Image 1 (cartoon, each protein chain N blue to C red):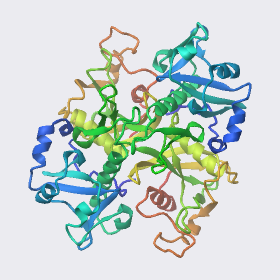
Image 2 (image 1 turned 60 degrees about the horizontal axis):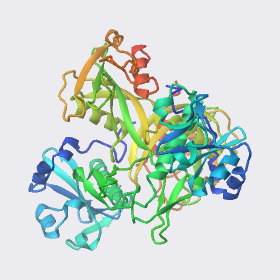
Image 3 (image 1 turned 90 degrees about the vertical axis):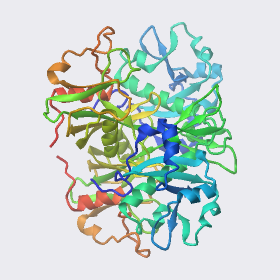
Length: 309
Length: 309
């Protein structure tokens, strides 16, 4: 399961440089540097050419971007990339009438795979900084360190290090015992008509496989076995890691334990042909976006690419 | 890859009850309830019978355990389990001369697989509570909600929900191009003589497979392909999820980019026979504990159970 949106090795992270402050300071003076501003989880986008906006060195100097807000992302060849965590939209978007802070979801069909990967990385890091301004343990302020890759409590007594947060979530294509249909459900608060495979967050003390079994049973009453990993996708909305699985159902009657899903159904490969794209607003049967691992799992199952050996 | 220590489905989590406060309050009055105290990441252990200590209902009442400190874990049959987050060791350990707060690592060979799974869950939840007393976003205090499964900022303006934190880490058995040896390394701060497979934390914007490639290359200079998921293990020291992989090396000469490993070597199946258990303190060639997924990966490779199809 390759080429998932938001993944894709777009930058060489060069994490060894995070401990070489002087070296990274020199990169910040390079004319060719790329600075990607993120504000409240939105990336800066250029409406005139449908690409992300990279602040230039001179613009960055004019804007007085603080070191505290800069996150070293890595290199594309010799070009160093930084994210900048911006607190006020108009601080930057006023520089150019074509510039606008936009959600990654809203521009994803306009940008390249590589751009999506880089913007997702910048977005995820920026959101984590904004959510980690104070130490959860002692309540004191934290400060950015290691070129934006850790935050550290400023209390000398505490000095807790806070690392970027990623929340693992499983997402599972469940195959009917007959092998001819798969399990879809919808949550009441999803866009009208949208259905997807079964998902949920990993809990403390669980393996991924245990989490798959628990989530499917809680939400549908279906017992699964042969839980097989299919692939993973970074999903920075705001901070998930989507872990794709396939599993075989042992039973087929629904008896949910919780009320997470308002509708649950078995859908055959033929039945899936009646489903439309997410963009088809009026349809009452829609599949998740092509950028999601959920959709990749469904498409793989339709093409019989998921093997339960 | 089943039966990994700390995993194992020991309790039915009954997560739907986390929203039914009155129901859970009734469980707290049940004579058969089990309360597992955790203090500073240590579980309460009974030295006289080598099992964990469950505080009884009457002891819990005498101790005046607050609701704020109680975490509903789930059921073993009809027996409800709670963890209690204790701030002062002597508040409880003084009740019985055989009771002692001990690290899970130090007692892991004395307890059953089921006990290990339950204690790890209690420990992980308790540590998360202790590290989440304040809101990272606004710095205000948080309070426990949903029977200990979320914390919520008490500021009405912020109201941020904080969920239990789990940090995904990959751990990879790398096979030499010749298929006859595997890659081991050691960090300088590990116990004397200990070697293990290559591990590292997932970063924002990466898939697991990308993380495996990056970590192996950073730490050893080895390029890997055919990155195959093998299994996962909760590792609450303090809050990791270990994601086991195997990968094939394309080259075999070392050129690390960072200094994380002080020694790196290829070891053949025959060579691995010279390695001893972690308990053999004097040995300068030791493998990780049998409770770790690292060791399970190595043992599986020795038995040729890892298949690169």
